[in-house]
Amino acid sequence: MPQAINLLSLYDIGFNEEIAETAVTIEGNALLKARTIAEKFNTNCFADDSGLLVDALNGAPGVYSARYAGTQKNDRDNINKLLTELKDVENRKAHFKTVMALVLDGKEFIFEGIVNGRITSDLHGSNGFGYDPVFMPDGFSKTFAEMSLEEKNSISHRKIALKKLLEFLETVR
Image 1 (cartoon, rainbow, N blue to C red):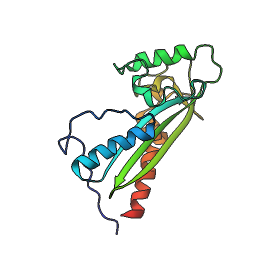
Image 2: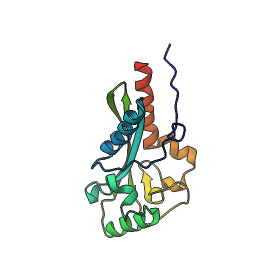
Image 3: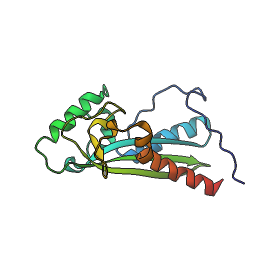
Image 4: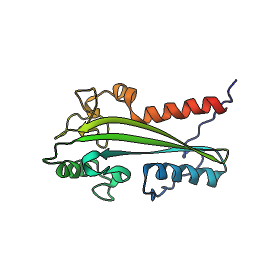
């Protein structure tokens, strides 16, 4: 029978600092966060990082998705910058990527989730956050921001990465 896992939040363990995301990749930032907590509290830990990668912008905003338009991390400013940079660009292919990093008994594991889609030319919908109003996943005729939370979560990059992490934990515990 698999061993039970006790999940604790950063709040639960008394950690309220911000971990600087200084890595140059999404994978690197996820590992940085997981390593920081694992080392500081001598415990197993998983952490994630996500980003939007746009083909025509060579993968930008990528690791800088939250602060694409500046350190104020403003969703509207980020979207406006993205749409300005894609003005008159035909190739609007993009994908959301989540990486979950797990530090388990001193070993590191990476789990990735990707949702392919495209960037719309203007904003649609009011649900979600970040780039949701301009990201339309492949196979859908509405943006993440037009979807219900349940609909978005059923196809999300975070769900895909988390599912891989959970499947892995079932095999090792």
